[in-house]
View 1 (cartoon, rainbow, N blue to C red):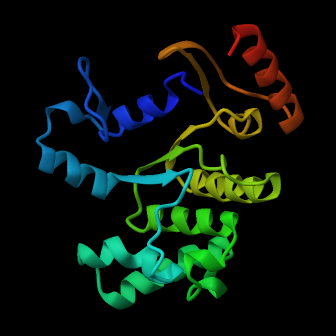
View 2 (view 1 turned 60 degrees about the horizontal axis):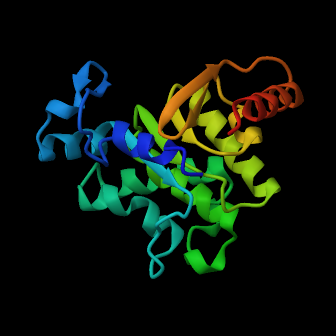
Length: 206
């Protein structure tokens, strides 16, 4: 906490403005874009998953998931529902489509948030502590879904303080006081990855 992980995520995704340097996505310098251009890039190429899913409490899960695509008139209404159904079935929450956010568990709510982030088929999904508010079982289910998404070709940038979450990554960057202090590519079994990361965190004093 306080190391600058979330600030980095918000900066590289263009949600925050940086004071110097540049940020490139698919060869496009995000810092050179106008506000409208940056907003378009986020809509077309990025998805976002936060620790607390920002679903509207007065809409059901399906309505929440298709909302932004509906507002931007992406495809037909039928296309949007079909895309949402595909994602929700994969996430195991299609049968909950008419439930309100207050009527589902935290893990189910987070999976709905992931489905919403994937509606436009983004190139990269930014995840800020996606399992931070979940118990271990729900966290494992959410990370399993994110791993499936990554295997399909969607890049993920995940901020987490949990070694069990970080152990699933192809590359782990360690931060302290706003600076990158180390990085590694975990290998071996899940338990071995967690052990190595935990030892490295201790060694770095993070």
